[in-house]
Image 1: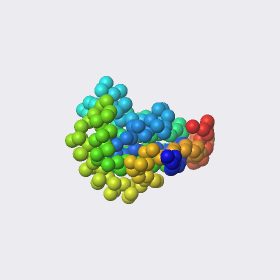
Image 2 (image 1 turned 120 degrees about the vertical axis):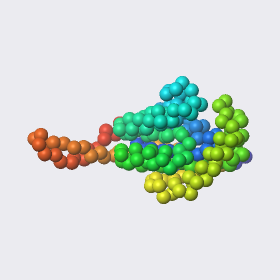
Image 3 (image 1 turned 90 degrees about the vertical axis):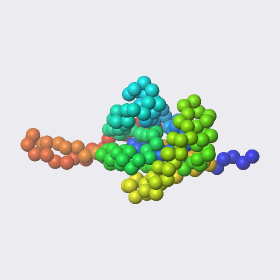
Length: 203
């Protein structure tokens, strides 16, 4: 049996990686396989922190306020963020893209183009099933998202298909970034000075 041919995907630290796809398409499994737990910001986990139940959909504002807060805190100290949510709506993607631009880092979108039947199979096998109706609704929205994300301003849009889930190998590269900081010499005038962030350890 031939070994699986690996597909190398390089991401930077710091950067923001947005996982986009229907429920049960394998995003969380992919994130857990390729990234540190601390690098992954899951909307389900944030929902559980907000209201004690990751299945409770009544508090989206609080849930995603926490997602965005955690992204901001990590990017402010030069870390990689992988957002594990469906990211199916333009507003959700626009908010995350704006956070990346605020901290001047690359923002990449990973599109999980997985067959509907495969998502149903994944859903049946996992402990927290969402059911066919939700997956079908997500698929309809995902079709619209695929047609528009190329013009939304992401630095890269990477489409992942079913066979890619086993082939992908993530390489994380450290890239120092430069932030603009305001200084007030003499306390009355200001100039813009550019300072490199502390590189820290590679991860």
